[in-house]
Figure (cartoon, chains in turn blue, orange):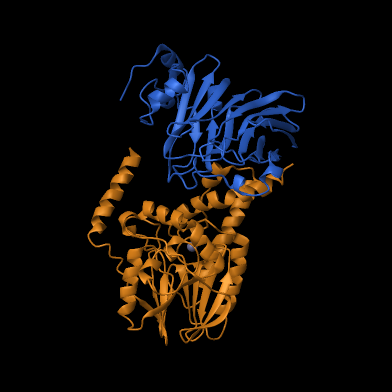
Length: 256
Length: 312
Ligand SMILES: [Zn+2]
């Protein structure tokens, strides 16, 4: 179905390659989700949006393990990005995380928990205030959010809480990449008797104190989260620091 | 939409087979009194009803020893009929080689017959059996109707045992799961390798420890070099007269582990690792792409953790 485009969309389309411009649309969800209207109202407060192929959301078509569904959001084709919201229409907790790129490009890899098959989307706000939306369907065999995490079941998770391991790649095809893993159960609160317990904020700085990126993470992010980002033009060590919803903090240096 | 199409296809397949739910089991004679039922080298689907597994039996002097019971109550019942067509002797023992559902969900059809397995297998079936059965129900549909978990009660110990007048070497290994039983029938020289060996079908890894698995393959390979060895029945895929399934399983696991380690070392994330092409040697193997995809999910997080460091 074709819908008339707003003035903003038409202006934007004029600046883009023809194939991408043809895929721009400001209504009519390309993923045909019954919940899209709800999503636009609740997650984006009804703000005007543009379905934009430059917002790349990569995830497997079928997620074998609904507790660890890999997702990569790449909005580097959009220019200056202010905020990215990642959400899943049919998850019991819709919002997965938000990230705010500063010196780092608008790129983030992570894993999330899904309860059932759902679109996984990224809404990307550019400096002009417009939300650009991209996404992909992920099919699951269910059960990710209401299954207890392995962490809470094991005995020594408390002593390992918030331990960070990480690495930077300075040469080769992945030069400029930072990957880190934080030990945390990321309990959703949806399992009877286990309250929500999850990382809330994570920040990345360079050695001079310049912020690369800020993250707000919610319950659906997988247990022991692993993040992949690009450090951009920054060199030297990267400082990662953060806090969970119980006030436990961490801080770690990832050497180049 | 694609999802609706898949449900529709499943519905059609369900209707096509619902009339009979016939697995078409025919005992293949491996040697003397030793037989196997050879499943398809496919994924679980509503069309195959879960008949993707090999089961077997030995006609011993004191009765029939059954090795694995298949993916459903119906399979177990049809297996029992097919055994009766070969021998008038009654089943006297059902052995489950490990805790995967296609190897024990036919137990129900052997009511009154003792069910046996390694202790860790018994524990695993007791704690996770229902979840496995539910999952198989989702994947194969009505073939599973009426299937309930029957937990083996008799714990087997490693070593040579006299069962129903037959000498069996029970080899307790692990690596495919936490407890994998291989059975060597000394009289016939037939080795039932369970899921430690896959042949002409990519191995599955949901509970795998690759290092332990490779060590187990060494032990099985030693048996195939014994003078009396005649045949190897893998858990999935055709029977061989040599150690080819062990070699192929080893080659796959070695490549898989190495590929995931290289990928993590190069800084790739899980999505990028999933996107890596399979070498032609392995790409041609049935369900290779699907098993690779699943194995990335099962094995990559631990390998990635090693590459990222111990944590501080
Ligand atoms: Zn198995």
